[in-house]
Image (cartoon, rainbow, N blue to C red; front, side):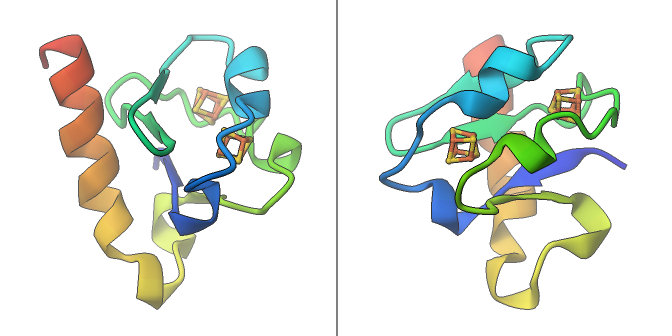
Length: 82
Ligand code: SF4
Ligand code: SF4
């Protein structure tokens, strides 16, 4: 179950999560960062680093941010070519 970045990251994007990810699967896009779900190893290290609680395991994403599960996949794939 990969981790997902959600709405609170928008406009904050301080990249704390990127510095701790051991597999560099967090990618910067225009307004936020996104996690590539096929590269994430579900280690959970990024979650407590986020100052705005934007990161959730995909099954725990709050309902109002459900769209971010697909957004992370789509935008990360666009950055990596797959
Ligand atoms: S859970 Fe681990 S591998 Fe996945 S994005 Fe966070 S730090 Fe990276
Ligand atoms: S730590 Fe949180 S706010 Fe900072 S870039 Fe990562 S997800 Fe966005």
